[in-house]
Image 1 (cartoon, one colour):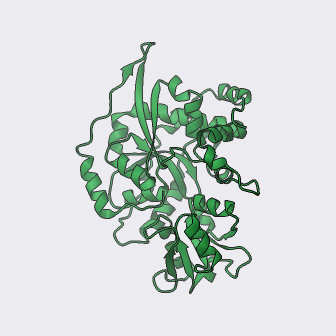
Image 2 (cartoon, rainbow, N blue to C red; image 1 turned 180 degrees about the vertical axis):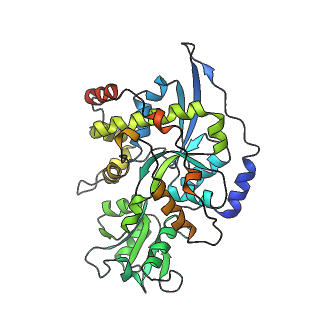
Image 3 (tube, rainbow, N blue to C red; image 1 turned 45 degrees about the vertical axis):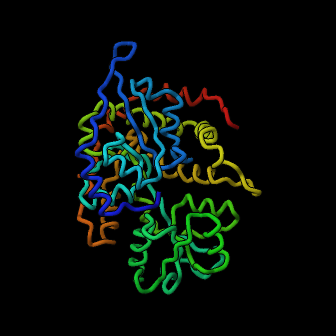
Length: 364
């Protein structure tokens, strides 16, 4: 999730797109209507995380199937891997984090977001509770833990430091301490780092282990895109009907969950039970991630599920570009495709509301 794509690797991936196999053609279903196949790469080895309930609900409830779409959700090694597989043409689409998508666009690769699934900070900046660090400006002269060199959080961290007047190269020290495991806990508890910048999922792991941190993340990060349905213009042009049906089914799944949050939490418990295992205080990483997703997934306009925030995306791209001379300027409108949004929201909302009202919990 956190590993950034490398420039050399991206160039090699671009070459692969020239030889990628064509997507399978539509085939007639039992009722004579055309059915389509669609492969969606999920940026997690476990396929789902506790925030991806919109996709899980649509699949579980059969919305994609009703729309004549056979969807295969494919777990990947993270956002970098998902982005690489999409660019190489091995997947129709994927849900890499915004930094992986943005970096690909900023080095000149042809990528596009056809449906914004969630917005808000994926990565954050944190400091121990009751400690001396209460704002970004306090980080000058400190050791800041990161997950790994080149982690996706680094670009955000560097930009936030510069905005506070701190040179990230000379006035702080970045210390790799892992992604929420024992190494991370030891570094935070023994004081070898003064703060920690990483993905929120890693922070939830730290919290469930009993270490609590203050969130110093700049509020502007909440306007940034988080995840979407990411593909290439070529694949979208090749399979527009499949993309339309996938966007519609996803919108239906999101709408269902917004009508019955507990139903979708229940589905997630069944899909990834380990994430919902509670600690001694009754806290689980799954519940923490799910609660945050209830702030990040709901659209600004419920009638426009999947719609893009052009200004927020542009601010995000500009911020990432500012961290490297190797990045080129990108116009957000060139990487946002809204061709499917209107039709994706043209579904029977009353029917979905009835589905939500009648759902019986299975994994309490």
